[in-house]
Image 1 (cartoon, rainbow, N blue to C red):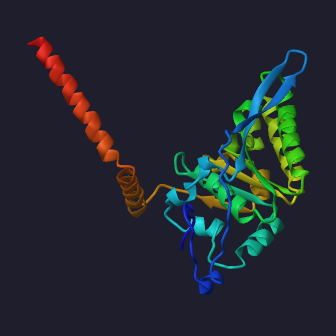
Image 2: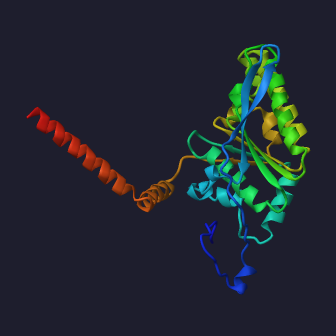
Image 3: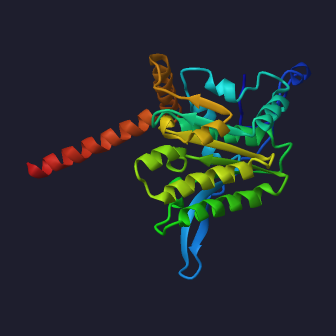
Length: 292
């Protein structure tokens, strides 16, 4: 199965194979990501960077899907090209279940990378339905204001920006909320720990805005969490596809290391290492001669 190829010359495909494969032609965007800002107080021109936006497919996420290695079949569960009618099935699944995907697990296991790679795949395979795909990664920590009761307003303004994008039917909008536990901590836990009530307002605001944005059929919401048990139950109930990514097995670690070695061979990294070692040796010899 060929996931993607770079066309440098004419490719001839047998007519018999055309009925067995799906071909998606796309161009990778090379634009730098755009930072979306929210103005807190117009009188003092106080702004925060609430999110970062990419237009997909982009070069930054290219080959990210192929580089991910997991223990189980999570990649095939969230995305598969084996079924010729897959995109119709995917369309039904995500739009019956309100487009919510949550990935949890320890830090550094590839949760965020999986969401970005999946967004890249969706932008390619749904390019016949949508004119443009926008990927918005929300900066959760920037939505907390130093001013009391302002955090909930920042959350609302952030989702107002997303709603403006989603109002264009030909735009596919994919939202990633990384470390969702910082925004949706269990409200009972907040009350038990005597946390500021502003944290409670943030949770209520996020749940309300998610319910509002789910009305749009061209919006996907991806979230990641390092501490699943600290999440509010109301948010978990709103999550339709939930997957856990744990520590890699020995086989997965071997595959990761092997892919790293193959990549170093491909880019001839050993030549670079040899040149650097040779230069370092020459410098040491030169210093030794000076000392003599």
